[in-house]
Image 1: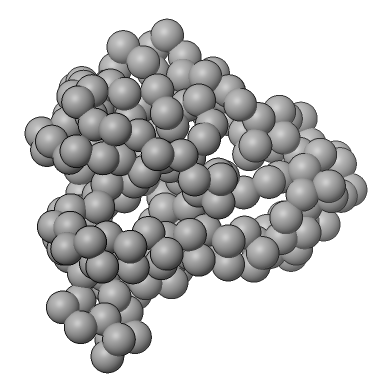
Image 2 (image 1 turned 30 degrees about the vertical axis):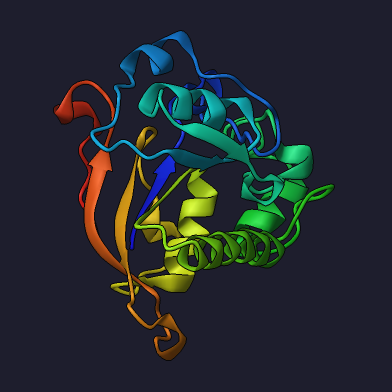
Length: 207
């Protein structure tokens, strides 16, 4: 089975380097106009319920039926949401979180461990359903954090969480291990894709 694990297009928060999290921020005008239709044509796409992911899926896969899954939402950054790292340089709670490797619980939000368990559990459930249905392709449009969590946990080659950050509108094409019950890592990276105009702007190097 082929898996397309894709990130939403650009928003104003991306452009201002703000933490988005669960804030339902739409695509920016520039971000929406930059996206192009994908070169694969699934019948169904799984999406985060947040509007930036749903609208991205509409543009990339206009023919596909969307199903939203709550657990595909981005990490909940709590009180940090809507703010940029520049604005929080002197914030003691933010400094403590960053100095702890961004692993602790964000005040009012999630820890990275809690988020990764949620995101990876959702992904594993979708993969199991697709396998039971005999699907040849699984397409997910979600967030950068979900990509990083899933890729760190399940993908080959092995890389750290922050090494799997794809650009907006980009993501990973993965092959599922034929008998994943006997594989500690289920996914093998086949290629990176970027569904935006201008390869010089969106191309990124796969791990």
